[in-house]
Figure 1 (cartoon, rainbow, N blue to C red):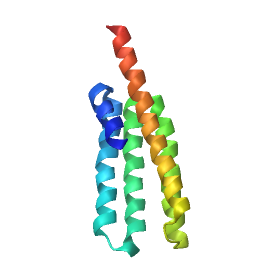
Figure 2: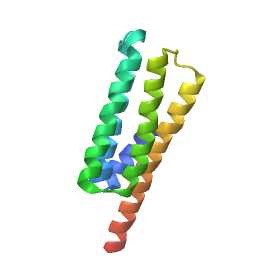
Figure 3: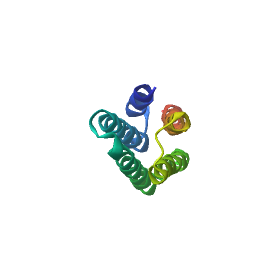
Length: 128
């Protein structure tokens, strides 16, 4: 699902959607590398850092393009950052609740990018 939405955003989206898709793709790779290579006791801090980078990337895009979909994506990213911060501070292991919230949150960010891409694509098609 991640790669499908990002591919559509890269192919049919406006610059804001393309940059958002690139951020998601790069950080998805980063998260996978953290899970594969980082020691278990450092993963939470690294994931929190990655979430901070995603939020900063979305903020830069929002300041440059002021796209409506970005407000939703930034809210979902705030939830993601809070989720990682909570598990880091409480030092709880990543349990089923974490995985469920993480997956719902990731789907929310992707949905925001998808909606932005479809709106942008439709506007361009209507203008031709």
